[in-house]
Length: 261
Image (cartoon, rainbow, N blue to C red; front, top):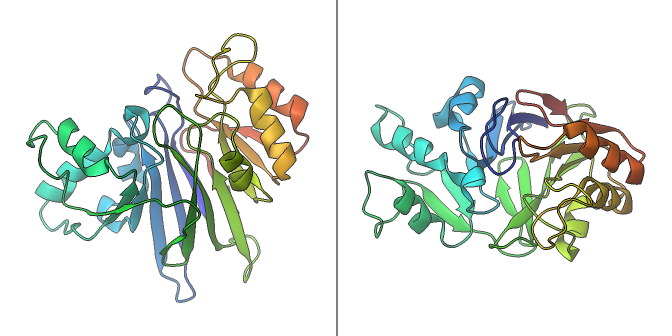
């Protein structure tokens, strides 16, 4: 399994990166390449096209419906509707139950009362796995002001043939039981840390670097990639805070960076 960072800036697209979007790829036992996108935040669809033809996507999973995680699904919908030969009507798009209506409202060319985009929609259900080729995605509800999901994504290892590996992705969340489930014993934990300890004191929205590090340590994650930093944050402050609570390998998410599992 390979993780590619398409976008990693929190709350909005930043000067160095689009907002949250992550590409996961792996091959099945027949050698067929499978590609799934987790989130398509503002500014992400352009860089995604440089990594994979949109019609080659096998699945899109949305953690929640804030624009920095879903806005560029509108670009994918336009591509699917108007590009000759795209034929993407069967593309599975999973998210909160309100996803089609919110996409329709975002699409300037669509009636907001209509269904959003020519996709095959599905809805997350707590702890219920969704299979896509060799991938298995298990969602857990997170703590955020809107319905939000984190995921455990299992699939074949690139580094250890014949073995299964697990990536945890938190979406946006504060400390919550679902976070512990996502972080437990994963090979790589992709975790948000949008808040700074002592500066951002409101709870129930985002993790700080310290709380992200504590979740990684308690879950015994093998590696950590810290993401969703807004452009006004100093990433080194966040990185140091994570390292104070977690002594394993820690990386800051960067646009275009990739990680093999």
